[in-house]
Image 1 (cartoon, rainbow, N blue to C red):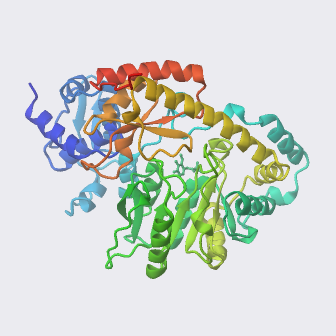
Image 2: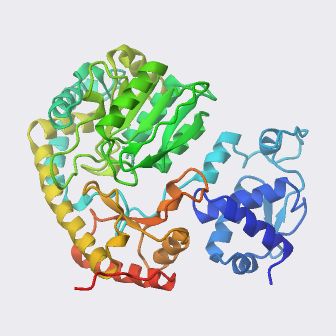
Image 3: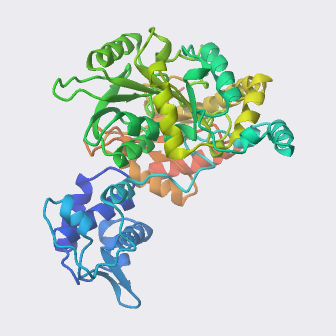
Length: 502
Ligand SMILES: Cc1ncc(COP(=O)(O)O)c(C=O)c1O
C-alpha cells in the first residue's frame, strides 16, 4: 500500500509532466520540502522504497536526490540516508513562493544556484545518449569527408594568418559569411548579403544572442507547442515570458492577445520541430502581418531543411516578402556534425551592427581557422556534394524505418503531419499512453528514443503521445535490431500493433 507521502508525490508527479522523469520528481520533492510537507531534519524515504512506491527506476530517484543535494535542499549522511537540511536555500524561498525568509548565515553557499539557474536545472533535458538507434536529430557523422576537411584545415593551420588567431568582432570569418550568403540565396531563397550574417556557435548561441539583445525580463515571447526544449531553456534563463501556441498540419496557430504583443516569435517554418509539418503560405502571411503590426521579430529556426526527401525543400520564410521582419538561424550541426559548433544568423540590415557588437561583447568570437576551412569547403563544392549524398542515404534509411513501422505496427502509428524530411520521424502512440515510461524501458534495452509528450511546455491532456525516432545515423541492420526491441517494449506497455492485412 502507498504511504500518505507517496500519494501526495504521485499526485504532484501526474500534474507536472514537463521534462524528464527525474526532473519532475526533483521538482515535486523540492516543492514538498519548501512547503514543509517534508519538514527540515526529516529523513527522505530510502531510494529503493520510493522507487517501488512511485513505480519508477531507482536511478530516477537517485538522480532526483542528487539534484536536491546539489542545490542544498538535502544532505546525505553516510550510512544514515538522505535528510532535509535544517536551513533551506534562501533563493527559492524568497522568490518562488513569495515569502521572504531571513538569509541564514550558516547556509553553505557553495552549492547554491541562482533562481534562474536552478529553474533551468529543473528542466535540463540534454541527453548523454547522442549516438545510435534512434537518437533524434543526429546526422551520420561517420559519413562526412573528414579527410577533405582536415586537409584544408591543416594547410591553414601550418602558417596561420594572424587575423585568424586573434579575437574577432567582425561577426565571424568574412570568407565564410560570403560563402554562406551565396549558398543561402540559392539553396534556401534567403534574401541576404554577407554583411547581414553573424557566425555563432550553433543555433543555441544564436537564440541566446537574439533573446538577450532584443528582449527584457518579462517580455512576451511566442513559441510553438510542442517545440525544441533547448530553445525553451535558453529563453527561460533569459527571463522572458513564454507563450506556447498550438501547432497543426499548417504549422503554428497564432492567438493574438492585444495586451501582450510578442517581442519575438520563434518558429520552425520549413519543418516544424518535432511534429514535422511545414508552415502553410496562408499562415506565413498571417504571421508576417502580425509581426509587422506588433513590431515583433519572427525568429526562423531553419535547422534541418536541407533534408527533404520528396520534392524541393520549402523556401525560407525570411525570403517571402521584401524587408520581412525575420531573423533567420541556420546550423552546420545537421549537415556536417554537431560538435563543429558553427551556426549563423541572417539579420535585417538595421540590426546587424548592434547584434554583431553584442556578439563580440558577450562571446568574443573565435574558431576562425575552422570557419575559413569551412568557407573553402563550401566554395569548392564539397558541402553541396555532401548534402546531396546524405539526402540520398537518409532518404533510404527513412524509407526503411517507415516500412518497418507500417509492416509491424500499422499506418495508425505514422504521424499524420509527417512530410518526408529531416533526420527523425514521429511514431504516433495511442492517446493517454505513457510515452515517457516506454522511452525509459526502451533505453534499458539499449534503444534511445525521446517521448513526444516531453516536447510540450505543460502537462496538458492535449499533449500528443509518441516517440521521436532518429533514422539518419543508423544503418539498416542496426535499425532492424533496435526496432525489434522497441516493438517488444510497446507490447509490454499494452500497445497493440495494427498491421494491414494483405
Ligand atoms: C529545432 C532545433 N533547433 C536548433 C537545434 C540546435 O542547433 P545547434 O546545434 O546549431 O545549436 C536543434 C538541435 O537538435 C534543433 O532540434
